[in-house]
Length: 199
Image (cartoon, rainbow, N blue to C red):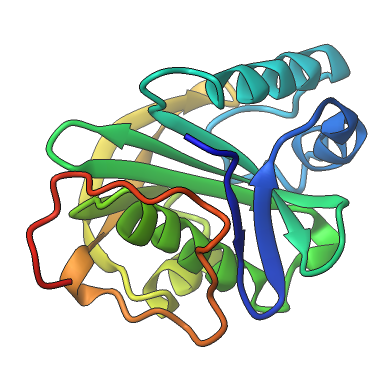
């Protein structure tokens, strides 16, 4: 598959590069930015390993993981990290984290829409799902605003900060998604993904 590049009204997704380590560390090393994530703040060494794995995943065949840099439209600097991992039955799970300076601007919702564009328009998936911490109300608003439906709760799903916590799950089906204006998927190779005709 050719390198992924998707753009929206304000943001874009691109492949992760070695030079992204410092900007990713500013997110994954920040206790506040990772407060509701499924892991504790990362060290620089850990972020370097995540960066290397992200780059390597882009060359896997078949590619099942898309770890991408979120940038402001027209800029190159990483302001967030987004991930889509495919699963059997034309499905995938998504997740993302943004730098604190990008919070409160609607960037989370647009990032989710860009991941939907990757999953539905590029990969031909049928279902995309996500999970959040029960305390992360901002994430709940973002996922619902993007068009997802709350499915339920997975009990004791994640062990983090020395304790087990539940996850609240959300999903969206291909026919339920309504793309926002300004999404461009021309920078990514298309896959039929087994999609039925008509979409």
